[in-house]
Length: 192
Image 1 (cartoon, helix red, strand yellow):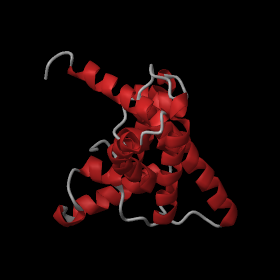
Image 2 (cartoon, one colour; image 1 turned 135 degrees about the vertical axis):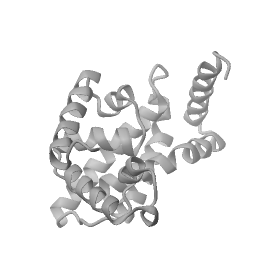
Image 3 (cartoon, one colour; image 1 turned 135 degrees about the horizontal axis):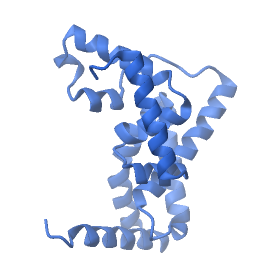
């Protein structure tokens, strides 16, 4: 890849969001196609309710459409979009908590799939047991630690992107990740 390619890609992304701000539907459709899959994977882990996940993806993309003119070009588009999604998800979780308990037992877990690197049918019984332990350990993390784990492993974001999405310093992301990993290691052992 030529050394100028990432810069050109970033420029084209900035141009794409400028076109969305001018109400270009084709540009918006491209942004939707480029981000909806990653948003779904991230939000499935956060919300655990397929209906809420779909609503949150749609709510996020409505904000992107309505507020594209507020995107600051010095920022990464993915961080801006995931920040919107994270805020929408937190609001939905809060509303859900007011109505009823958060459902548990979700079997489709993108974070665990990314960490494990294979599908459930390919895993041995011992591997399934380890994944169950990991899932339980992740659920026991503080919400702040779980957020950084989910954004890093579930959505594939860098520390800088996580910091931007959560509107916290990169060092805070690193600290939360350090403590999350430490808690996970103590919960499930050093083999992970």
